[in-house]
Image (cartoon, rainbow, N blue to C red; front, side):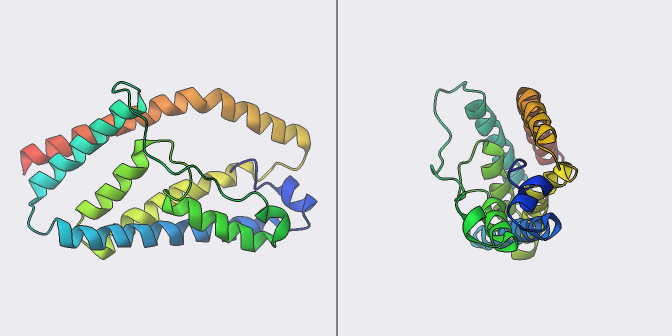
Length: 198
């Protein structure tokens, strides 16, 4: 996404970067909040009889299992859909329209290719909160975290700057994967510690 929404690209399409970006962030937040609220509603029905300790154990186990899948330890692929956002939208619609559409899709986390189990763990966490409002808060954080990295390309106004962004993203791919795995391990550990304390 970072290479799709830049001042350079939007200028070339006759759009305003700030407007497309704002629509993208809003769409991602709305998508995340809607998905989190839905998960919270499902969780309110499905987990109403399960106590906090059991919920934390379920979360820790799910995050741990997801990490094993992400690391290729168990030899199964992460379940996912095989579609991306429609790149043709960028030339077919105004910037704010496709920005909003891309944001909505990416904010849900699951209507495009899912590359990490953390997405599923997030929606499980929203469900385990057992409430629409708390699930929506989880979704809000998810939607914002998916969208805000687009602000890092705010200064890309020349092709050479865009190439540098691509090079940096390629260079950071593996370290980012390691950080994500470490963060997942920390979440699982905190959930287990919480389960023991409660």
